[in-house]
Structures are given as C-alpha cells and as structure tokens.
Image (cartoon, rainbow, N blue to C red):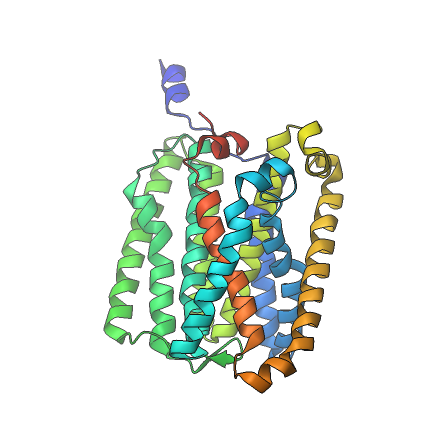
Length: 352
C-alpha cells in the first residue's frame, strides 16, 4: 500500500530534454545574465561595449531565430506571409505616426513597457511548458500570481524611479507613487511565500516538480535582480535582456530540433538539416551569420540615407527602424508561440 501511494503521488521531474540541457537552459543562462550585470556594475564605463556585444551575439540573433519558423521553407513562408510581408509595413507606419504625433520619447517609453510585458509573457509561456511536462494543472492561480507578481512590482518600481533616459534616449514613465510600489511589493512577497511553502510541502510528500520549481526560482531571481536589486535601469535591462535573448534562442532551437525528430525532412531540407542535434553549432552559426549580415547591411543603409532624411525631416531614422523591428518581433511572438496550439505542444513534447 505504501509503494502504491508513493507511485500515485510521485510527480515526474519534468525536464524538457534532460538534466544537462535543462540545467544549462535554467541555471546556465541565469548565471551568464547575473555575471554580466555584476560586470557592468563593477565597470560602468564598459557598459556600451557589453551593450553592443550583447546586441550582436544575442539580440539580433534572437530576432533572426524567429524567422527560422517563418521563412526557412516555402510552406512556412506561405503560412505566415502576412506576418512577413504586410505586418512590418503596418508596424513601421504605426511607429512613424507615434513619433510624428508625440515625439521620440514615445518610442523609448513604448519599448520600456512593451519589452517588460514581452519578457514576462515569454517566461510565463516557458513556465507553462515546464508545468505541462510535470503534469501540473494549467489553471493553478498561485503559480500564475507568482509569475506575474515580481515583474509587476519591478516595473512599478522602475516607473517610481522616474528615469530621464533609458538606453541613451529620453524616456517618460507612468507616474507611480511609492505607496503603490510598497503594496505591490508586499503582495509579491506574500505570494512568493505561499508558493515556496507549497513547494516545501510537495517536496516532503515526494511530488516536487523539480524542473518547474527550478525554472520558477530562476524567473523570480532574474526579475528581482533586473528590476529591483539593480538601481541603474540600463544595467538591470542588460541582465534581463541577456537572459531573455539566450532563453529564446535555445527555445527556438529546441522547437526546431523536436519538430524534425532527428531526421532530415525533404520538404524542409535546409532547416531540418541544421536543426539536427549533431549540427547544433551549424544552426547557431547560420543564425549568427544571417543576423550579422542583415543588421550590418541595415546599419550601413541607414547611415547612407540618414543625411538625406535629415535635410527633409527630424525623423530619428535609427530609432524608428530598430524599434519597428522590436515591435514587429513582439507582435509575431504573441501570435506564433501560443502553447495551447496543438502543433506547438507536439513540438515541445507536451502534446498529452
């Protein structure tokens, strides 16, 4: 009877691919992000260099990773034609209109808050994947509150700080009183305490979902450090950005690798070939080369036409184009990465 009870109560560890991959995915990425934050805090003069390096190796790369799902074969391109052809023009027009009506600051402000939401939602999605792997209920209110509590506290605190600039450009934030920050903080601490007590209880009963718990802890740490413990908004952004970009890159690779199940698909020959586990370095090299060429050519083009644009208008060309790319990426991600979609669950190994 005891053995039967343990078998019923036991919950799988819930690794996405296995101990080595998941510890890299959860702890390795977190470690890189935290060390990077510590480095720029210790040596603030080197922040611009780290900023550029992060953009080249991770930021641009993670945007291009999205297009492995959209454009690397004819079927994907046809399926997502609107997202590739029409949506960028719509977003660009919206960005230009916002700048024309409100000024340059609105682009930075929109990026501050939309990026916060984008990062939070991605982490929520990953937590759901881990939860499904561990056979956890998808409608667990405490887990949802735990995911959102610290990010909400963090963005309220950043708004309360009222920074004048964000990533070298003017920003305006929502007016937030300290009382609201304190209430959000108190609520977050209560929620986290309740969640931790739940995990302790699960551990004592032999049903702790190990991978999901580790991921949740990494989520709380990175948002807590990035938004609350690091006072400089740019240094905090760097921690979160490195964590988010790295997580996204590995998530897309995992999706593509699972999609082709270690075999080359003649209908998707190139993508399926580089997505094999044995070709993992080729996959990342291809994405990095594409991102380097694309963003290098984009930068050169903008530098070339900027003087002409400056003669006609005060349009901040670089800010408009790069923010349009960011916002397009946010919209696309919100559409293509819905865990409730059957094909997505299948390719993440959570179809059941």
